[in-house]
Amino acid sequence: MKMVKEVTFSEVNNLNDYLVEVREPIIFKGLAENWPMVKAANISDNSFLDYLKQHHEPMIVGTGSVANEHQGRLFYNQECSGFNFSRKSVAFDEFLDMLSSVDDTEQGQAHYMGSTNVDKLIPAIRADNDIEALVDENPLVSIWLSNKTVVAAHQDLPNNVAVCVAGVRRFTLFPPEQIENLYIGPIDLTPAGQAISLVDHRKPDFALHPKYKKALKTALVAELQPGDALLLPSLWWHCVESLAPINGLVNFWWQQATAGAGAPMDALMHGIMNLGSLSTVQKKAMKSLFDYYVFSDEPNRFKHIPEKALGVLKTDDELSIRKLRALLLNKLNQ
Image 1: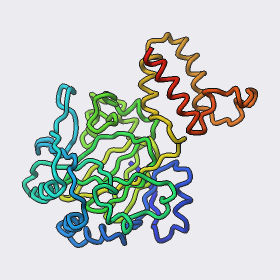
Image 2 (image 1 turned 180 degrees about the vertical axis):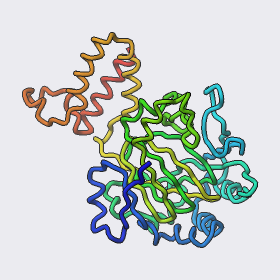
Image 3 (image 1 turned 90 degrees about the horizontal axis):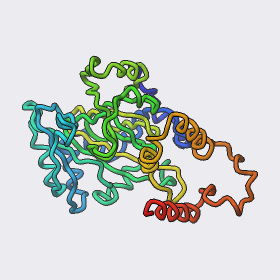
Image 4 (image 1 turned 60 degrees about the vertical axis):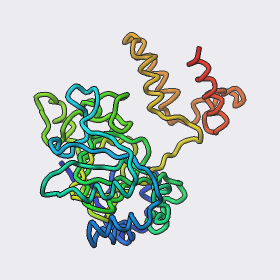
């Protein structure tokens, strides 16, 4: 597998040049090396955890634990009817104590805290641990903490700058079109909201998942040390391994969309419901309609229609989106 392209952050003249239109993954080496959070992690794991303890708000957080027999892999049970890990809401302090109590030599339970809003959990540190180039994008900033865990390949809609603030992270990345080779599981029963690959990428079963070999030919690998950041484009599949006894990842999510627009995955599920049972001929015809009305980037394709008559075709402002949302709700309730 190829390695993701690396750029030393000290050599980057303008980070914004990389963020305008994100097309491919890039590693920014040392982007956050001067963050206080990273400096604490470089001293020791305990120093990193103490830094979080000193600055956090009293808050209950969502956590999960998986037995050591699963080697940190957060996945389904054998029947794919549930999961191989248990969830629990605990005080943040309690979770940090839980994380630090695992003896790495004993390969004990893997614990994690899923993506949690930094501005709610540890707002006091945001100003000193931030990416200035993203301020105008008003990103959602979240933190994920764990010991040794493995998250199966999945997608996220927003663009993301993922900053390793403690431990070591390895990303295995696949372009969006590799969906047909990744053996994606259910889209309505998922570990954390996004559909995941059913392939164990650490030891793939090619008899069970033969097309995964094709996906591997396109795979890219990124390994992050504390202070490194990965620019992750929208909807790229990514498997994430946390490789150290204590690991921390801060994500900066941003999405360029009209205010008020809904989630694209909701449109996908609506399409599954309404289009999945059509004949092959009808599906082909509907694909032409979707290509024209939804996926075309040709700005003048509706120029023949008077602007006042555009109706639901005008989706570039919040008021139009609200009108379309009301129309859809009315149709769904009929």
